[in-house]
Amino acid sequence: MLSKYLLGLSLICFSPAIFAFTGGDSLLLIDLTQSIFGILALIVFIVGYCFVLGEEAIHLRKSKPMMVAAGFIWLLTGIAYALSGDNLTAGLAVRQYILEYAELFLFLLAAMTFITTMEERLVFAAIRSWLVVQRFSLRKIYWITGALAFTISPIADNLSTALLMGAVLMAVGNHYHKFITVGCINIVIAANSGGAFSPFGDITTLMVWQKGLVHFADFLHLFPSALITWLIPAAIMSTVIESAPPSGETERLHMKKGAATIIFIFLFTITLSILAHTILNLPPVLGMMTGLGILKLFGFYISKHEPIVHEQGHITHHHAENMQTHQHAKGDHSDVIRRFNIFKVVERSSWDTLMFFYGVVLCVGGLATLGYLALLSEWMYTGLGATTSNILVGFASALVDNIPVMFAVLSMEPEMDLSQWLLVTLAAGVGGSILSIGSAAGIALMGQAQGVYTFASHLKWSWAIILGYLCGILTHMLLHNMF
Image 1: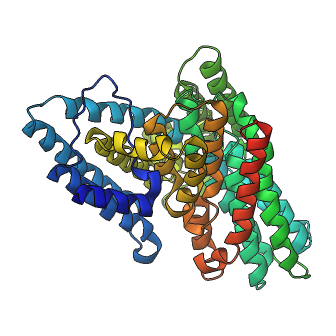
Image 2: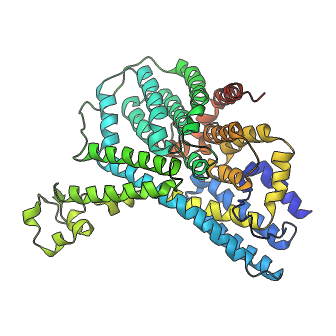
Image 3: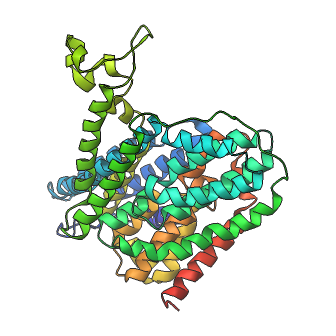
């Protein structure tokens, strides 16, 4: 009875966030939900996720509690199976989850490296500078940043896009706090909505694509619905923007050498990943890692042909004829060329997000192996039905990061057609916009516009965001005859 009570509490707090992955269908899993080990594992998960939700208040990176929780959950799982006379299943199951994570990890590592490399080459700074220099009105900046967030996020990912557009708002908004507040909310919605109709727009869409449940071209069916989820709240919020001229820098920034080539390599890599997955049925990560290798080769070329800042701080130019010293012979691993070094660029990637994702995958996998999958599957998709459950997934994403929510749904592998898989993808992607803590984009902008864009200021407009969310869901259902 106690385990049922705790499960009900977790459903209220986390909704489907603890669904289980069924990658181990061949394994004979034991129902341990009523055992002391199952109860303790569920408590560990809840406590760990409470720390995640309190990240902004306690300033503890969300990856740390989830990684610790994952370790304890699997220790409890291993002990529970061993005492049941099975010393193999737990080990086999955890290896399956690690393999599942490894493929996504490499894909995300490659994608993040491309984004941070373009950031280092001032690609995004040049875009921001151009927008500021144009001296558009505040209202125009509001719509331009929203439109760019919606357009760029399908390629660059919603977090990077939100930070880029947020920098524009900070540069032109100055002391216009209401403009910055609604502008940040607008960017969060636009970035999350834009990322919902592309496998590259968010980790959740990437997971769905790599699972083979939705093909690349099918994501484009979400475009009308995603557009509506952004336009409706954006139009409502635009009515409160001050009629004031913008402020900010007037000096134009330019991209560094090689930036255009890196953009081309990135687009080539995306195309290669799509074709390899669609035509040859190879994992998309193969194309991404191949493109990353090409990027590293080009990075080596850049490191040989641009100014270098030495430890002493002076600048020098080195060319092929200067490559005589031992340091130069070290290539792109040398401190001499740390001005541009792919390995240094990768250090700026979002390692906390990658490690948090590891914790989520292992935590959910452990709870699955303990037997919570069947119980939650029965409650959600059998009891409530696919449509209702998928709509609720969006609201769960507002309270909990959409990564564990979507991984939870994928873990269940409910029997749904394409329209339902698209529905849950849309819901998880844009539902996180309802609250500022529901997505990485919202959390990042709260830090960027600290004290101006807050949880409370976002909450004031949640009704408009919910209206857009429901209209987007309704549009999707109408377009796919789901009534």
